Image (cartoon, rainbow, N blue to C red; front, side):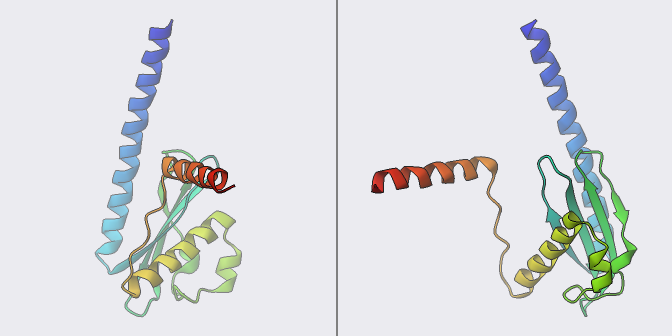
Amino acid sequence: MILVLLAIVAVMFILQCILGFWQVKNFNLHYAELRKHGKVAIGRSKGLIRTGVVLLISIDNNTRIKQVRKMQGVTVFARFKNMKSLEGSHLLKPDNKALNQMDRFTKKAYEDAQHVYRIIQAGGEVPKPKSPLEKLFSVMQKKKGEVSSS
């Protein structure tokens, strides 16, 4: 019984890896296509259980949005779709009407794209987000520090 359960878990893990690879390949295809036409700002809103959003925003030299592609979903089956509502607006000063029509996850991804664009334009480097394990260790170290200083 345990061997059957382990085999099922192994098959599910392999399937997850294959589908994840397929999704990354889809991302790279869309990114390369937009990159041919100029700069691309990337924004994301991560979610573990809730929906995640990735925005690819193609911009010209004046920071005008030429094209936006949005991938939103919870599973690896999410695919990019064109998002026309922002085309023609300025990346850093978007149309309020278009912003108000976005759901909160897309809005967060758009704000992330603006933030990352500002950092890169200033010559900075975008900080790498902590992994779940790094977050756990930092919380554990913080608690350990509080106990030892008491």
